[in-house]
Length: 183
Image 1: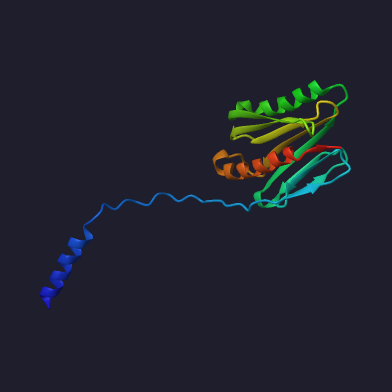
Image 2: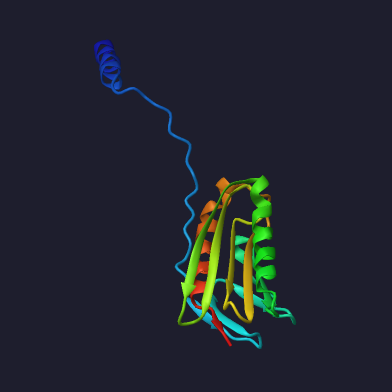
């Protein structure tokens, strides 16, 4: 009986010595978001566009709006300005608000957008880093209307943590600009 135990112990040590044991890497949460469907928003404002079915929109009297993503704890604030021979001034003001983030931003990238058929000309700004707003856009018809938007989260800015949600909502903001129509 002692020989069997001795053989089992020897076999255990022989077969247990194999590959080197390494600690498991730290796991990261993989966030998965629903594929959005879009609905056209109609209002008394001089513009219309489509938003995600996961978002809700609230309009103010001056045609400013807020598009809320309750599950992501984020809001896109929309600002509308009528052009009264002051297009350049309005666009400089919008751009100034974007570039105020230069102090904390790592990078500010801009992507131009043009749709001659709908008369929508704009730019999307991607602001990387721990800033208050990581995505902004502006759009105009170059004659009567300027629409701008900025994405805000209800958390302290930590770019590494919110980047999946930023990229998800960025697609919705691009879709908003692509479906923008002036009345």
